[in-house]
Length: 457
Image (cartoon, rainbow, N blue to C red):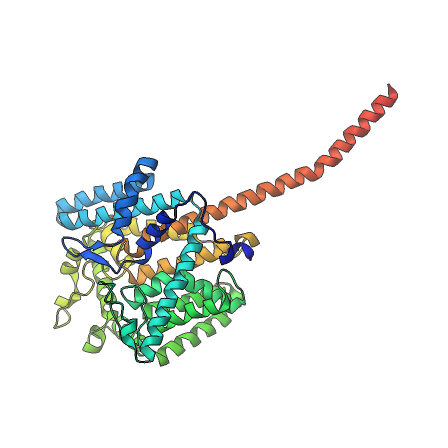
């Protein structure tokens, strides 16, 4: 479809290139920090400093900020007074949400809510990021791993040896899992293209590169995302595709499990923990136990604070109250203590059932299914790809605003709104065409009547 091609990607005339650079800097560059205390000062804060003041002057305080953060502020005050949240941590997290949500809402409004353009620009940058990841993989494979080590410029970046080619690819991101999450919509489109024989936005070789580098990340989160993508692309939610989709997903799972050691270890430890509650060293000394322990904390916390949670930034205190590292195992470690390593875990703990259900409603309302006009395909592809990303965040990312998470949530919402506007315009045009088809006959009848009346006169 020509409308969903890289050849048509032109920046809107009213958009400054510097605004665009700063906007996507805040999404893709989260591995450079200026200081760590009293909070981490990221490079992309420069975008906030430069753009937020003129945005506030131009647009005023956004209603979405008042609605979301006003409610969490009220809950936070109660939580602080109740002792379930620490004042400094609460205001640090709440302030970060205030800046991030406002900034990305202003960005989308500045682009006149053109979700499709923003999504396509994001896809374009993802391809560049994939090329960096491919460079990292190739240099490591040929013994030049220092060339693929970006620690010298990205001071919050980690080199992860292992994987298929000697390194678990993470490109410019902190870790392979985060790389896989941010790349998820681009991977969805790439898999769709390769499986359907299409060329939407990416050429076949570009789709293949994006898919390859995510496989080379050796990220269990990335592989779970791939399995979900394969399932969605084959439209296996329809009954007639169940068998084919199940076989395809099972084959992909078997290939990952038998060929990627890291994935195999995580699967084995997850089964040991979730199915058998086996707390042996093999199962608890891995990221699988981190997820298991944090889920236990969330379930205990929601029993005590079911509706509104314990307030933003309170997960660290919940960790101290409920962690299994002080009860069922003999050694203590505190991986991902501030954020729970999972957005779902953190939402349940800090915002309770109200906040969690609100997020689920956003996911449901923003989804675009299969029965659409042909012109709606770009919106469907964007919706499905973004949904995969957000589901992966629920599983693995506990930070509310890392790599522009509020941007992708709002992009998901406004993509659906833009789709509905397109459908409404299409229906209106069809109605107008029907009127125009009837109009000539109507005019002809009147003309004949006029002639007859003239003759009679």
